[in-house]
Picture 1 (cartoon, rainbow, N blue to C red):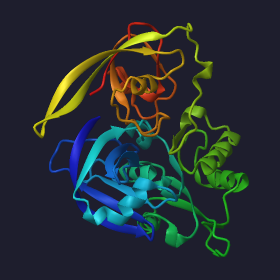
Picture 2 (picture 1 turned 90 degrees about the vertical axis):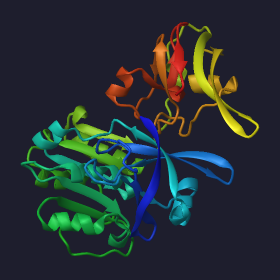
Picture 3 (picture 1 turned 180 degrees about the vertical axis):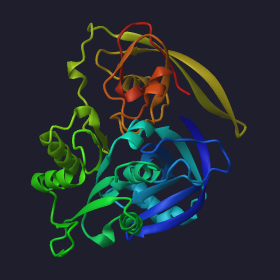
Length: 356
């Protein structure tokens, strides 16, 4: 992953509370996979915030795009919706995430996408990336009303062209429809399993990608488990996963010394000078590297603290660490020694970490 400064190319309104933001990369080389996400850094009212947003575009698009929905208490999302037209430059770090649609799976298996609300964003990227498949993808998508359904026009156009099968759930109490692919009310296990059996050719051979509110995702997962879908065919992206408890982490009970290489900015006569620094810090048993670094006043970016956003990534150059959750990283990232500081615990006294 790398850091970029991108410009606003255009903004489109998807629903009353949702926009899609298209970036001009100014011809900077950049690539990502369908399903991955980026981090935006914004200072709002003096507070530096870092938030993650999934790409709703596909890698072949000229302008990378993310789709942002207004949410209760969402500091950055709500700020962007109110001020996006006045923000010219964006601090971006990308790409992140292992929730991706691999080309081999896309071409050889039927794809089933299960979404709720703005969880459609990474799934929409996956859907648009499917160029050749012998089996029509299926989308199960829950929203309050058709008017609040993100990408409604695009999805309906794909359905009309017989490029996609869709079953919608509309949860508004007063919603009424006679259309066969509209469910009035919330999805339940019976409806989900019935739709999948009817529209998926080989139920256990298909691959299922799930993203949305946690409760809905759990319902989707339970429906699939009841159909005996292999676990490695169920792919999930939690926007707000429950942090894992390091209490069960096996350690020898002793503190570990860790070498940290990092950069500090200083200002001399209003000119910024960047210096390379090295510190030896003590990490207590079952204390994350991120918490230990903050105790020792080492400046390091962080946001979610549950291994989802990837903001606290660093490179392990020596020693052994244990990561509880690595959802923001790909296999290639980990092969290159990249770790998430909020999820990493030193297992020996030889650990050396570099913060880029």
